[in-house]
Length: 515
Image 1 (cartoon, rainbow, N blue to C red):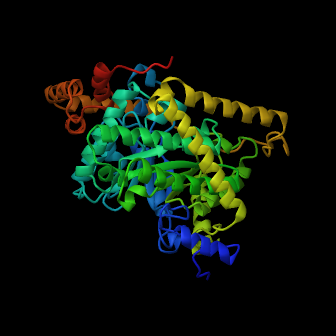
Image 2: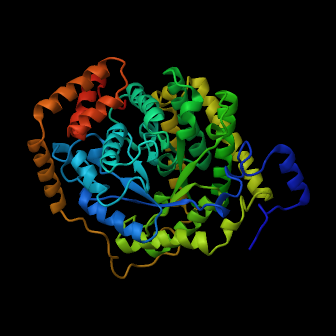
């Protein structure tokens, strides 16, 4: 077994790293945030999953836990993401399609039936309705008898990247930021082990950004969240230790490794120099990685296993704290149980058979990796300076600067593919005729009908007067300056639905419409 901490090209490289503090677990954390990295603890192996009803998704979670995942990762359907109940007219045909449908406390209870929330970490990919879904999760944890000060996990809660890259926003940016800072403040008191935001570069990269843009715009968003929290009266070291990040691992193997290292270093410097954070935990960038969904091809889907394996290895060599590997069939539909298992096995082979976990920062000292790390950091810094000059991230989003930069990068890349300058195996080179269509996951259309029926049963069995009173109190709080989270919790506890709570906030904050 390899026993040294990292592989170096020359002895003088080690001397230079020691002089500059460039060691694992030392500021600015280029080489990792823990001294031994995976030698002492592997990354959390998550598999992003959720479809149909809470009951169906619960079965998939139990299966994945039996196969060795070490953390849950919940995908929600579009109506849930947009603050619409399953019987909303606009939800028709979308219920349970790209994630699980959650309308009320009853659904959340079913989703985690038989899974002790005190014993697992859970990541929830939800943004506009993040405060509502976290409230439902907290209520289930309380019902199970869990100590809320000990439960751990992550809520994505990153609304700014929705305006940049995804579009599942509800409210205008500024009131949406209020909900996020309210959640920061509440969770610092009530959920000290919970990551209250996962600032996402993943979706920015999926929308077509470059690696440099992914780092730059993610950290620009982080700056905006931190500034908003400080403006709301929070001390940086009270909430910064629970900030986490979510990055993409794309096809440029060495570039991706350098990207993770550059992001970690740049974040540490921003927190130290710009915000004066003093706690080491405030300076450490902890991040989840998902392999690149946009790199998967419907043509020759088995080849996606190779792509995903390289991307997963890059994430590990870059020092990720948790990882999701995509299923080979995700360009065609939701992953089958077989492909989800194979994706998990990919992580397990990297962890237990490759040997790369025996070394912290295995590529540290590589001339090319160090040069790429420096270049990506410089490029990201230049973007952040431009955004600052525009007046900050919110203004840059409102002026469409960030969106235009991502769109231009996506267009340039697509043109390169169409000209054949960028090779995509199976698409513009090395193609072959498909002999027969691959097996794909099929969602039972009856699931939507059953979900709507259960929702109506919940409405019929609850106290309508209690729900009405608590929703009214929420609206009054939104019109004032009270922290919204206790009011959202109170509504959720009375079985107010995700759509009803969202509608009360819509009535006060309005809805965002892109120009």
